Amino acid sequence: DQQVKQNSPSLSVQEGRISILNCDYTNSMFDYFLWYKKYPAEGPTFLISISSIKDKNEDGRFTVFLNKSAKHLSLHIVPSQPGDSAVYFCAASATSTGNQFYFGTGTSLTVIP
Amino acid sequence: DAMVIQNPRYQVTQFGKPVTLSCSQTLNHNVMYWYQQKSSQAPKLLFHYYDKDFNNEADTPDNFQSRRPNTSFCFLDIRSPGLGDAAMYLCATSYTSFIETQYFGPGTRLLVL
Image 1 (cartoon, each protein chain N blue to C red):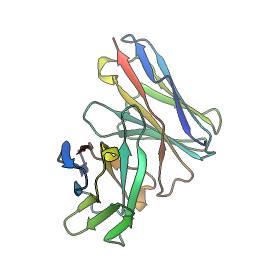
Image 2 (image 1 turned 120 degrees about the vertical axis):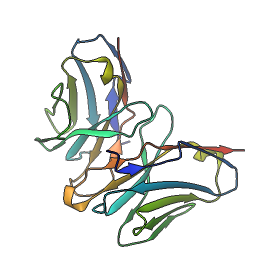
Image 3 (image 1 turned 180 degrees about the horizontal axis):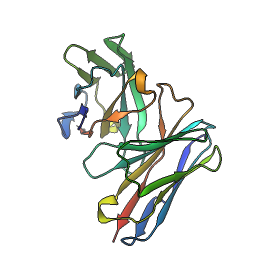
Image 4 (image 1 turned 30 degrees about the vertical axis):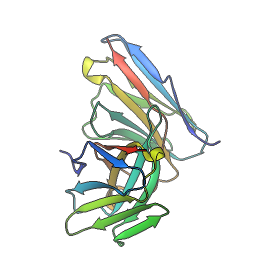
C-alpha cells in the first residue's frame, strides 16, 4: 500500500515561472520529509527536507511547504531553470522507524526554455 | 570525491541464474541500504545494514539476500531471478540509522531474460 503518493507523473513549466510539485501521505506517524532529484543515469540526490515541527523550509530557489492537517507537502521552485528538468521524488520517514524512507513514484519536471 | 559506487551499471542475467550486484562507498557511513525500483514505481527498501547488523524488510522475498563483508562494501544476491525481478537496484548510505539524508549510488539496472 502506497503511503506516499505523487499523483502527477509529469509537469511542464516555462523557464522563469514557478514549478509546484505535490506530494500526499497517509501515515500520520511520518514526521520528516525529503525531496530528492534524479537525473537520467544517476542516483537520486538530496534536495531539501522539512521536519514536522515546521511548515516551511527554504533553500535558495527551492521551498518546501508542509500541511500536516492535510497530510500534504509541496515543493516550489522559483524561478524554474532548464537544469531543473529531472524526476523529483518525495520521501517520508517516521522517527519511530528510524531512517526508513517511504518514497513516492516521482514527478518528471520539464522546464521549457 | 566521496561517493557511492555501484557495479555493474547494467546487468543481464538468465531466468533462475544467480546474480550479484555490488555497492561500495567512500563516505565511511555506518548504514547501507538496498532499494528496488520497478518501472514507474517508487523505490522500495529491501533491507539495510547498520554496521554488520542486518535488517530485512518484512515483505522482502527470501530470494533476495545481502552481504556486507566490511564497512565499504555491500552486495545484493538474487538467488533465482525471475522475470519480475527486473528492476533498477539502488544502493544508499547514511552515517547513522536516525533520520538523516541518504546518499544514493547511480543504480544497477537488472534485466532478466
